[in-house]
Length: 177
Length: 177
Image 1 (tube, rainbow over the protein chains, first blue to last red):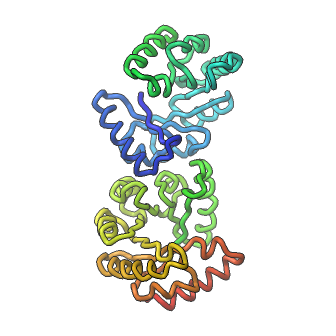
Image 2: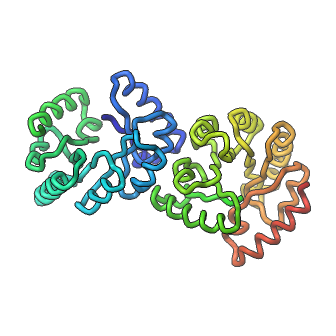
Image 3: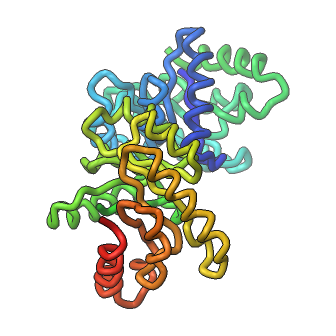
């Protein structure tokens, strides 16, 4: 799954729409569902598969009502309470993190993996780990039994995104299922 | 008509939704249609009458497709070209300005009122003047034959909004119709 984000770039709605539209042409070509970060209207505008909602975005229940039962709606859940609420409201999957807020805070890793595991064990939807993950450290989330991982920097901020994606994929396949 | 804006405040989507919801309770009470600035998803989330779109927001045609024929869709048009395009795409009304970018630029007033008039004469939808207008200067747009005016500061940044609104309304009624 590929998602398209605008929050950090402070794009205008028009720019976000244009970027999402361009990404949609690529994801369509490879038959990959596209999720839009935060903005339901942009998702509708480009015919995306759904949205990913953070805790500062529209509530999942409101999004479900607007987008209907077929849309994919994901939610960020940093705690067990947030996770359960999101699923009750109709989230199809959860993104949980950040696992590595910075790569030096080892304690944070342990705490988050424990929470990840609790969340995974308490909800009936797929749970994806997120936050500072890459091919070199993703093994840390193995004990949580997550369904996959979500990354930005690991692919977007490296010299060779294709190679990084391949390496990450290989690593992820060894820790899930 | 009342509109609800978030752009300048840099609200999160959740905050904008909550604020729009609160404003909707008030506009419903007085049976005033509520328009949401920019965000179609927030408009849908609170059941607003429609949206107002600037040149940096989603295109009017895209918004019309998402919101359907019954929604009110307004567009900001600063030039005749923008005005005609917005109406072709399905805008129900136009907001044109800024008439007074600052209250000292008298030349800007003349130019904008001329453009206002051209726009009003060339489109078949209501045209509202906007930008630095208040009870004291709104008479300047009379030659344009606009259908009304839109304000923020004239009401929101004064000590007595109710009185300012009343005075503005009285003035506006003398220059339209």
